[in-house]
Length: 534
Image 1: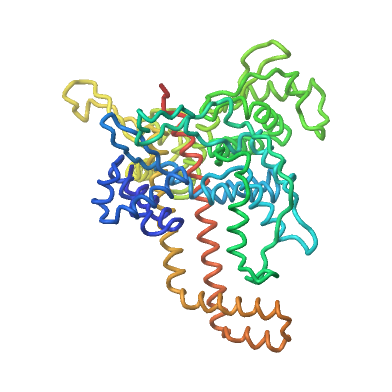
Image 2: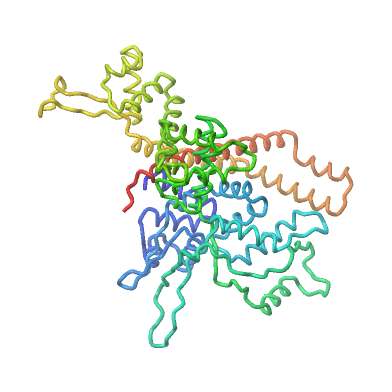
């Protein structure tokens, strides 16, 4: 792991879980897998604090544990999973786009809690939705439950691994750490629950009508009630499925930009038909016949079969090779070449960054090297039609920034410069890794800047929150307009302007983080696709 990734992990853990969890998480990122006692001694924290922090990290799927041969339990942080915290807002927004407010809150609750039972999620979401509704209206548990089932059917949520049931015998002591297992067939099977009820609103008064404190009454109710029927079946967000959706959206958008809307809709239909049957790391989608694609097109697209075949032929003949033809049965079998599509997206990202940083002439040279693979300096000058001096400066500038590389091919064993070919080339995976490292560094800088802005205006923010709380309580009690105005005037005009500037700056930083994360996603997906799996 690079220093930029370690720093970003540390900042994300500190922002979401606090100082103690961040200290233990960063220690595990730096050192790898460790046993409990070693973590406690190295970090200088109490054993109880370390245990609680590890429980939080395990609950949020950020740390895994494994029983070693000598009987020790080692804890290891999942660095990639920690970095995914940066993408949480995007997961939630995607769920809202696909499944509405209910889907958004289900994914949000699962991300906030790490792992939850279906019954707990349904109750929490129904209560939150009821809070936002008008008086007299409530959210039915059945509606929330139906949305949860749809999320599970499309694999956006999945079951967590469980402790296997084994007969307990007094002679054999239980192992120091359980081995969690999950059957792939059961991963998306929703338990049959008869959840009847509606969301409840929070009550403002602490005492109930009978004078008994609410906390005590809730505790008594909790003790008397039976455990839910899905007790022990926990659910989590399937991050790989969200990434698959983001990748599909990027491919559809790229096809729309290159061709037209109808082509992108055909590719979207192919991806939608194979989204559950194709694994996230597969190089191709499942082969689909022209007839199947035609039947699955949206109702709004009134194109005849002959036109569809023409579009599919056009897509298959395109130099980018997003769509490939794998057979002639059923009117022709077609697949989406996912790895080639990711390579094209990553290359387009590199081209865009070179153009932004070094100008259009450098981008011309960069595209030329991508197309021709290897070129000498004289050839670059001739093909790009750029004067020798300028071409040399541009090549050296990109070489110093690691966007292009230089390969030596000697004619003789002594590597004499006069008898050596010097060829410029673009190593796309290496350039993507370099750029990914810079993106991590950029996000860490943005987070630090946001924390600095918030810290500098901490007193003003606290004052603003106090005033808003007073205003809310007075409005609830039916205060007069003059009284409310008097409270609002506690924040002076310069302070109000300062708050507006702070809000604008923080919004810009948040938007920048999301934009950089989009670049990170494209580059990470491409790098993962180039890694050969065993």
